[in-house]
Amino acid sequence: MIFSDSDVFLIDRIYTRDDRYEANRRFIEKLPKLDAATSIYNLLEICGIAANVLSRSELEQLFYYFDELYGVQLIYPKDSGRTVEEYFRDFTEQMFRLVSKKMKYPDAQILFIAEEYGVSHLVTWNTKDFKGRTYISVLTPQEFLEQYSQTKLQS
Image (cartoon, rainbow, N blue to C red; front, side, top):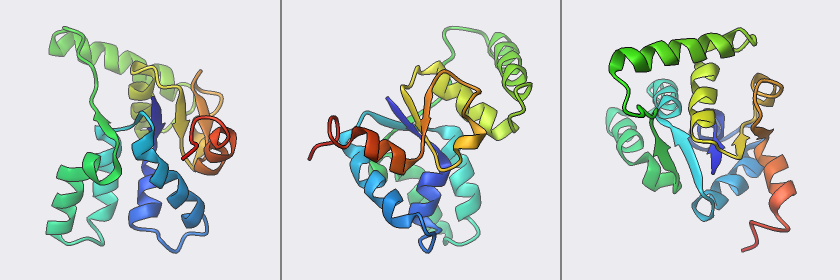
């Protein structure tokens, strides 16, 4: 599974004048062909930023139909049959493990769920926030396209 970070979708939807927009768009267009996902944490972050520029109706469309708009799975934390108390105890321990690696809490939430699902790649423009803090391969959208264009992404 390929996990896409919030910034990839924000550049596509909000920051269309960003210098990385074209490379980002090429990656976005490949998502439906991949086993791609993002998390509910990412979607909430995206909506929080998008709320400043989208109408309420546009924001609701983004929130409720995000997976269809982008052809990705929207993943939620796994409860693994634990009680709420057990889940939050485990979650808190994992958050501490990650923030002790000098991660910001929102990034720690995102990395936690990516690791929980055993994703193979985390695709983000903010690689410095994740590299060296996980076993997951962390790549920019451009790097991902370059690395996999000859093998898995042939159209």
